[in-house]
Image (cartoon, rainbow, N blue to C red; front, side):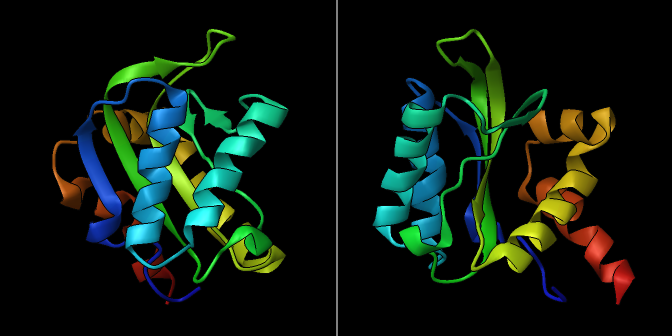
Length: 150
């Protein structure tokens, strides 16, 4: 992928969610609004968590809701939602940041996961994500590495 993984329109900061399902829906709706997925994809993201549990927790305080490409992906990309307060799953695991993933196929899935992993592999980056108050802080985290790769 030689383009930016994240656009400003796909970021929400300081958001209040009532529970994990509401948080995932907010994150998925951003993917719909930015033309990355159809509404069926958001329903599939929620259904997957109901069926499989909170497998979307990928780092401390970070969740990555997603579904299969055939559930309604139009274009690859991500959305980022930073919640005002942490949300807890039934098992007590909490998250404050959601990174919605839309991948067209297994190759784009791996490419996007690599970009996300670069960001969340360091505790400092996770702290920057959790405490972000400006869009450019998040855009820099996800897009700056790509600019140096070209």
